Length: 409
Image (cartoon, rainbow, N blue to C red; front, side, top):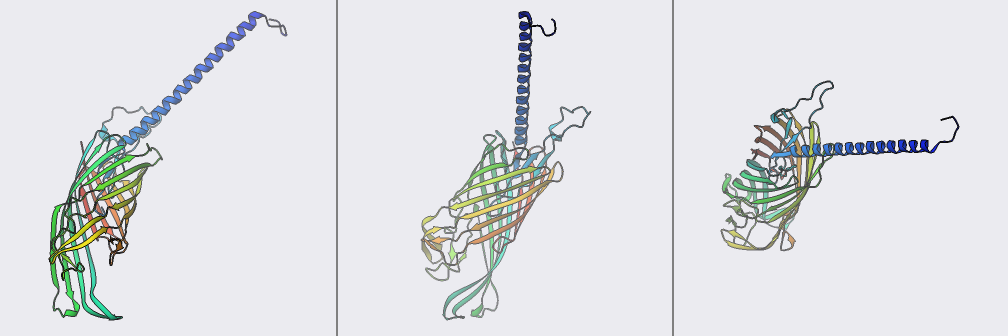
């Protein structure tokens, strides 16, 4: 074809065919790129699900009548060095599974779908306090007519428990817990203005089934690398344990319920409880950060009467204060089998109301506990978790020790 000459119809048709073929090739390349992108997204989703599957609790529930499960966080497979063949078929035991020791009452991650977890545990708590009671009346300031009673109370509490968890889906878990409570109180007192020559010691014990609990947990998002996990929780506590109004109380005089000493100690709170909460878990290799908030609502009771040595004493309507709680902590893996956790738990307990009025001497109480925990994986399905809590506020138990043995089936 001469330069500058007009294209013949055959040339135009040939060029059109080339353009059409090139357009088809471009379309095919676009489709291939789209398919590749879709495969990459699917692989990322599978990796995230695998991360989520292995980021599961291998066991668990603490301050304020509970303990908490350990977290089982598997690290993502490490990248292979360049020019090195990829190793395949490695045993599952070689995966870097890091267990974050359980220190809080509510677990942060859930039991895998179709898995069942059984967790026997034992918790011990010790507390001591001094109390000065003024039983009498004043006619002018600083002049008391009556009895000044000084008490030192030492309390030991042992709580073995059995907890079961069932993973319904990868995002939904149900839990049931049945505790058995043994309590021992020693009260050392000396009525100062009676001229007592020595201290009086009063011992009381109590044992039996505690308050049965049911909990549901739901994971709100998928989470993943640099994305936190959010878990919503709803806990229900029953009144299966013997409550403080059932046990016999030694009172000073008929009709009086102050300055009492319980001959038998209760094993339950005496109130139904609902506790919604939210837990956040943020993996950041090699550490895991976690925390949560909760609100405990204690359902009031009507027609309450206290069982005393001088006969029943009518109290009426009793409404315990609600509890606002929060906690936070960090877990650090020591090796493939062991990990260490540290955290803080705080609960603000409201004042109790009787017949719509705040009870005498009932005020808001702040409970703070510093917690340390250690976890060791014994085998693929069993872990040993040990934690210790030290009270940092006056009303918190001095020390709390917990041992748990979560087993997954």
